[in-house]
Image (cartoon, rainbow, N blue to C red):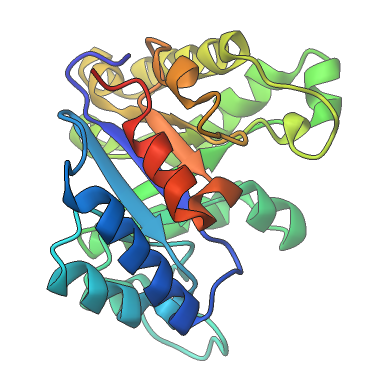
Length: 260
C-alpha cells in the first residue's frame, strides 16, 4: 500500500459501450457507490469512448458520483486538419480530468512512438488535466532480460527534462504486455518489481520528491480476486482496469478491494 499517495483506480472501457450503455453502466456504479462511497485515501476514474463522454459527464455530475471523468487518448495538437482526432483542449472543455497516453494497444496497433506519447503529455498538461502515461514490455523483451531497460527508456522518453513538480503530478501505468493474452501470469511480485523500478527511474530523472509523489498504477488484468493483493504492494498506487471495469459490480468490488 502506498504511503501518503491516494490510490487511483481507473476503468478503461476501450472500444466498448455506446452512449446508452455507458449511461446505464454509470447509473449502476452510482447505485453501488451511493451507500459507502469510496474508501478513504482512494480515488477513481472512468474512461469511456469519446462518443460517451458527454453522457457520462452529465450522469457523474447530476448524481454526484465519486468518479472522475477520464479519456482514453488525445491528439497532441489543439486544432488542425486531423480528421477523426480529438484534442486535449476539447476534452478539457468536457470536464475530463485524466487522459491515458501511450497505452500498449495504441503503441502496438497504431504505431505510436515515444515522441508522440511525450507530445500528448505536453497537451494534457497544457490544458490542466492529468496524464496516465502507460509503459510496458513485450514477452520477447522480458524473456531476453530487457524488461527493465525497456520500461526505463519509456519513462525517460516521456518524463525526462521536465520539472520535478510536473513529473510528480503524473500517473504512470505499468502494463505487462507479455502477460496479456500470452498464457503467462504476472504475479504481485512482478508488479512490485516493475513499479519500484519505475519509481527509481523517476527519482533519477526528476528527484526524490517527484519519485515519492508520483503515482504508479498496475495495468495487467486486475480483477476482484487479485486487486487486494496487488494494492498491498508498497510501490503500487492503483490499478488501470480493463474488462472488469465494464461490469459495475466487479468494478465496485475492485474499487473497495483491500480497504479497511
